Length: 439
Ligand SMILES: Nc1ncnc2c1ncn2[C@@H]1O[C@H](COS(=O)(=O)NC(=O)[C@@H](N)CS)[C@@H](O)[C@H]1O
Image 1 (cartoon, rainbow, N blue to C red):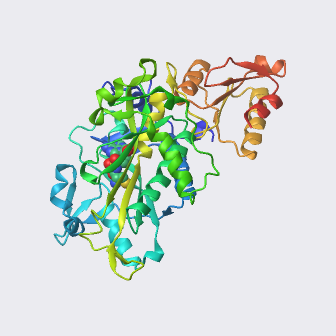
Image 2: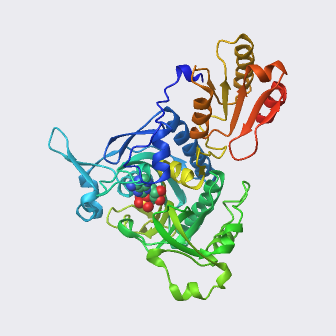
Image 3: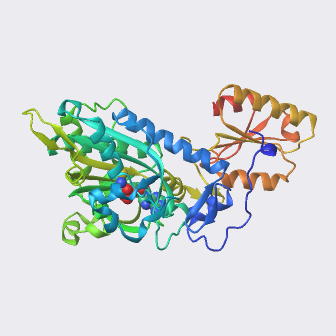
């Protein structure tokens, strides 16, 4: 992509209302723009990151056997009356009326709707287990949306829903999602720790939040330090091996880890002092088992092995890709700006022409640009006539993994300059060597 043709309205200063670093940097790097309180437009650079995060979430849901669908954002109020949550959900629900005065709502979550879809499509226990998910925008009329997209009113969520014959089967589905989440956050370059959590308006009696540690996290968290050395399960983990899955979950839930709401000071004190970690955390995922809470009132039943109809046992599993984009920045930035993990960077290479109009620089840049594009490497080519200092500041701000600089002096010696954003000094090398380093 040539920067001269892109849309990247960088801000030199962050608006004063931006209190946390990710909010400041996302605004300044032209990733998002606020359109109303808690409601954001995702500008081109931010959307590339959001899509990369969503693609990784999708790949790991699919690997775990979940099946993607797409439910609407607008739902009928009557559907929520069936579960009894329409009134209970409270002021966070955006209630609307259509032209026929029909009561509708902008979905904050989809337990009722997926249960309705399931009950219309499944009859027998032989069709179980099932896990259906989608990646869809949600609306929650938070009283105090703040911190940019970290706690916004409209936000993107992957929400998956599992259906099993009984609690034992539902536990296996729950464990599949724990393993999928551990893999997902590891691929996103984050260290996420599952912590026993409160179930809140979703309900049920088994729930874990996936928390990443970050200095500006909204909540205080308490956990055993050994978690920091745990490796995520491998890509070839067997999602049909219930015993193996349980062993992984046992390992990841055996050590102490609790959010503020669930913290047990005595249990924490029982951990050796040098192994106690108190930190701030950001909730990037939240999973729940809630049995027949929705299937009972909504009559989502299947014929069991003995022929009797039974309500299915369900769980729901959420990740917030829009919050994850901010959380990654909280965990990975420096004074110059964002430092994207390679897996989610909007572009892999920032190609900087120090002297557009200089024949040698233009030719070298065009050659490098063409070769990188041909190799399938996402390149943002700064071909503008901004001053060099401004070009370097922009590349540091938007946090691309590699910066490749072409200048007249270097070219005289057949050299270009390559610098990895995540630390490391700039090095001079031939264009060929630079290409090989970033491929
Ligand atoms: N206001 C918000 N802004 C940004 N992300 C949010 C917001 N509220 C929730 N999320 C994200 O969505 C995830 C799931 O939200 S949740 O309420 O915990 N769970 C559910 O809604 C369940 N239906 C899971 S499918 C959270 O872990 C968080 O990553």
